[in-house]
Image (cartoon, rainbow, N blue to C red; front, side, top):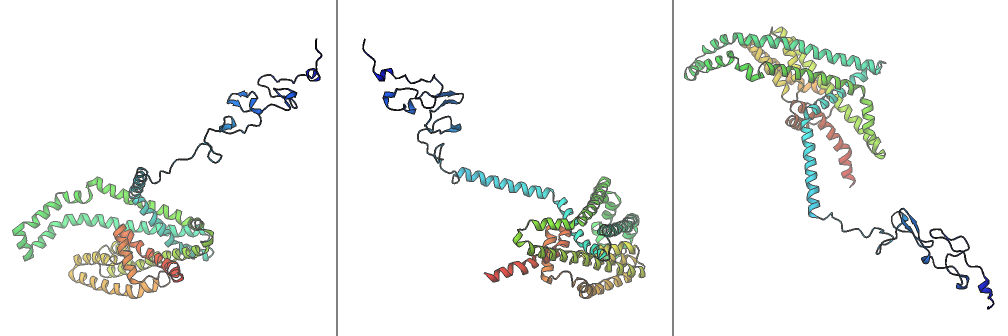
Length: 425
């Protein structure tokens, strides 16, 4: 038997069982005569639920660190290179454009559907801005803002109630009286030779009498009893809505201004605050001044009609004051209705009413309005006419009322922002 060599007498390297990493300082395969540890590639991988774990020394790549990187993958793009952009694809462009058109159409339809509510909100906001100067006057007299708002708001409610009590009963009585006395009016018209000749040719008066007395007149004008009820309910609901919104806007006007100014970037907030306060002051001055001018017109009309013994002087004076708020044409509408009622009293009274309203309009345009509006709104006459016409074309009477203060705000922005910027460039 041959003698064993020292190499043969060296203990064999401990071999780790399958699935267990080798202990420190040992190798899993090979022997000392190989001069070092075996390659990490030759080690048996450890099995896990996510797949085989790579042996030590092999870089871990792939999702979750459990799978090797696919062939062709790069460190910056572990999932492969992205494909070409589809921004220039005609289908994508067409779909995006169609989606934008549909969104714009939906927004327009939403605004049109909510136009009546938006008009009520805008009117309430302008009324709140117009009543705010009166509240601030009471505050300067050491009256708390809550009490000042309550006093001003109660005054507004009193005006609404007084207008309703003064106008609704006379209109109802006068409409009934007109229908009852219509045959007498027809008889007076038949005494006119020209009208009698036209009536003999075309039977105009007979057809007019049948139309008024048959009931079709009221049905077609108001849609019957249900139509009159719906008009009255809608008017009451809108009036209450405006009053409630005005109260809320008046109470939270300062917080609304602060919130609006915070939407402006900090670097421009000071200038935006100054401009916004000036615009609000101009709008408030215009609304308050217009109310004062209308009040003067209503009081003057009431005393004149009372002296001339024109019936329903209070209702007519309130109507004149209300229509006087409408720019350009409102004063003519109120004067025309009051003069027409004066003609029913007598031709002399009607002519005197026409002369009175003509003279008063000149006094109001050249003395009263400039004296009241000199510290509130500085709008050129051309801008006043254009603003009233555009506002009336867009929103009717409400637009005509709001057109002048909006024109004043636009002119202020042009004068303070746009024109100086154009001079610097």
